[in-house]
Amino acid sequence: MKALSTEAVISLVIAACALLFTALSYKRTQSQDTTASATERATMTADVRYIRTSIDEIKLENRAIQKDVGDLKTKLVEIEASANSAHKRIDDLMKG
Image 1 (cartoon, one colour):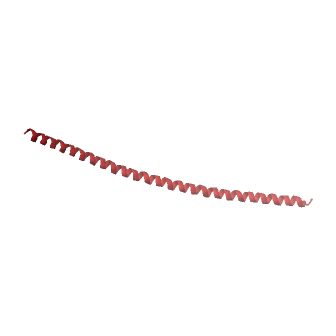
Image 2: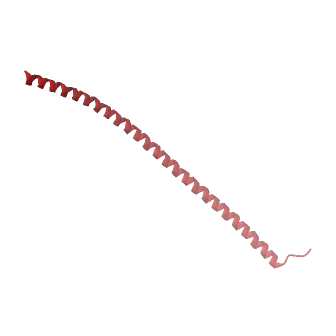
Image 3: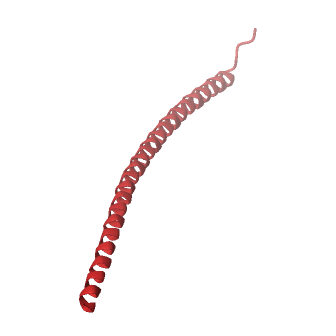
């Protein structure tokens, strides 16, 4: 069997080193991508929770406003009835 020449051995060593470097680089990039993806997902989850909480608060405020509007309608009806009654009494006083 013929021994490998020095150039062939050097070429094989360089090829092996290049392959190892490529594999390590790929693994590192994959790890960074996973970390970035997890960070992005965590950020989106936090944003969704914030939006959900804000919507719940808006719903509560809307219910309170609707109750206040209902109360104001009731008071307005009472005031209109009182004003009509007062106008009738004033009219009766003016006639009589």
